[in-house]
Image (tube, rainbow, N blue to C red):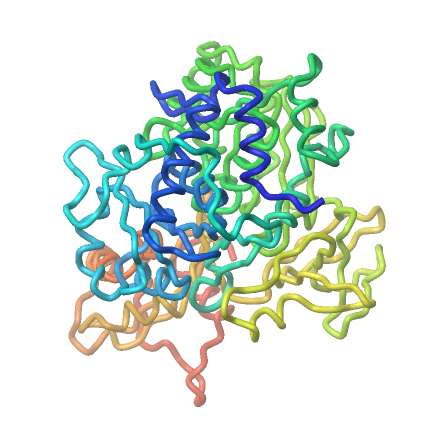
Length: 543
């Protein structure tokens, strides 16, 4: 059958209307209310004049409104679009314009930023603001609570064009080069790649119908997941994990605070008896472990069955430490990307922690040479990791980049996002990294040239190169290697503030190395490896 997510969630809501679907702090929204509120929002989109597969941007922090917006988009046959809430004005303009966004649901705290650029986004037909303390909905936007409170008499809401498994979700990713790209996932492919209501690791097969899914959820042996999504819903890790929990009739819990607080996480885990926790690498796991070490007997965490991470590698020491405090849990570390789910996975249990970056090849994963030849296990030959099976359609409005990532090899279509690896004799992967200069800081991908251009707009900067240097918590942090203008005195604080005025805060440098000359080649290019080695020496860090 052709799966549509709205049909699945509507059936679950009808079967268990009182079970919590969404929780944040003191707010708890049952499955029935989740369905009704999404119906009201979908009706608002339709009344705004949006046609089939119009794009709905969620410019929101974690919370019930995020998933309600996606549910409403699915109901109306629209394509939801994630928005990085750390973006600056120019990045938001680019994203909404590139995505052809016709509706924007946003937290009212972003009103000042949107008022600067709203006149440059003429495609948007519906602005809907989630009011916050001190930030009411502006006059030019509908109030979110008022919209979702007007539940239509005829439900479920369906647009005249209906729904299809071909309906899209756009997942924008910073990628490794250039501006963000919208990965186009068909709903049918997405449901399938996320397990189709099953769990291969636990030996639970996919379902074959909505009726089977509902019956399975209602079964006495079903253990309904209660998942704390600590990672941002605006990123694939948090978003797709939340979908897995909802597809299983579970509860998705957002932390009350917007800044990650490990003590708050453990408080909520105990209070909600959470079964699953979703994080992203060291940026989360290190403070989580530090909180447990400082308060070893403070929390009852026996409900936790799994902690999962994707998008950023973390250390074996962190895994071992967390499992020493929660010995009944498993740690699932997945290797994948927005355009390639399921490249590899590793699982750790107490006393059996997987090595960092020791991923087993997924069932649809292989490693190929650049000329399309399959790399054999134990050959010590390097190649690019690829996955087949359920894949995205491509990148939105970018056939050239789509052709570079989605390739036909051995008569099969593969997604090849650019990760280099060797295949060990036992079939495990030895990851080598991306064949680019992309910086991954706390799961956020930063394209160096974008930051370099921002730095070079400072009057005191003659030239600049940006590299990533090791960071114990975030994996990498951004280091600016800067050649100043004659007589200029530059400080890290000044340059960081300058970059923040143009780009998202996480793109601002955290380290500064001042040099006499960048030493570009005659063609204007730089040797990033040499510059990085130079920066590491200047900072006294190991190469």
